[in-house]
Image 1 (cartoon, rainbow, N blue to C red):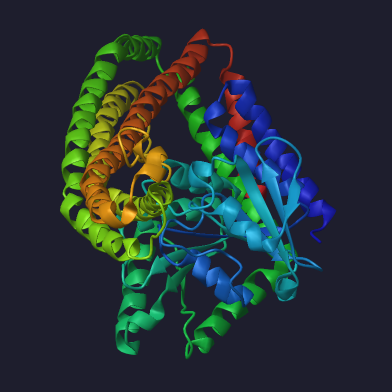
Image 2: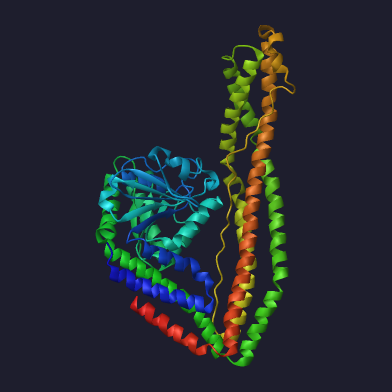
Length: 552
């Protein structure tokens, strides 16, 4: 266990930073503060988060480390909620809901709660799932955290991973060897660096390239990561396929030596790193307040007036962003309808061929055959629409990137104006924030079928001689297939358009809330400085924060 002295010391420092944040109204650091406090309450367990883009191989890596297919892997994003996996004397799975008491489930039911297929959009309201395994005895005191994929257009997935970042203890950032570092990967590495000192890059699917190609990918990844973050990164190639045991052994050795084998020391380093980052963030806000307090009255008054002017101009900025979002939402709906209906001929052909084969085994009266048809069509249509729906991300992601870029430009233009006013008045720069699109994937297609007959004709089965009318009934069933496909493609297109529309609305909301919050915070700090009665308090807090950072 981690020594009480270490925990108490860091906890006291975090408490002091939190008190300063509350004293000066710096509420933007609340998530970071809560993450520090949560870690210190956690009994010294080090959470090793496995992070990375959608389908980067995170869940597959964990199964290889565990030595069994414990973590579900699927064609859909495999992880819908955070799953923590650690050592336990017996195999046990505990589900922690967003409300109510935790409850245990059989390990075989894990996928029902943690996967997108079993728990779409986290409709079961699961906060986190804990898995305990005897096979993880070499990593006692460490929990491996399987996070939902970043870079997926599924809001509940991406948001969970982003929100988890402040709570990261150590981190393995999974990057697929056949998809070299993207801009999103580099941004993730930078965020990870801010939240933990103990992190490595997990280069997954290493079996897809030759040894020479792998060496080139490793060098490229190291160079890009170091250039972006200013930090040297450990690169760990890995594959779960036979013949790559040496790679898996190297990863296991890294985890044992760097984290499990020196857990007390690692926990202390991580806790101090988080507390240092928290103190540094608080100090940046207070430096702004100090500079405002020291500025000449005229400069400070000009800045206060500029901030008031920007706040008065919120209406036009919001209108500009809203108009942009409405335009993109209309484009999305048209594109979704066109792109999904392009599958009509393909899906209809497959279903008609399969129906002809299935009908050869349907015997009995009209009512029985009708029930056979409706049951078959429901299952077949669900499968087809599920397959088609999976392509929605590729069809519509481009609109999200456009929305992200366009809204970010609007926000950046506003933030740049603030930065110029602050720099002109106080001589310092104030940085803006990065925006990410948050899209909710529609739940599995809501396949609804119309009755096989427009009336309850099949109830008169005893009047229908099937040997005579069987060919006519089969032709009727076949004629229904194109219409059912058309109806359900429209439904899937509508679901995707609605989901992307929700994402764009969320982007608008996040952007406007951010702008209002930033101006309100800055105006509050500058306004208090103008009153002239907090200068000494601000300077004392800065001295305290500097001492904290130094001691940490």
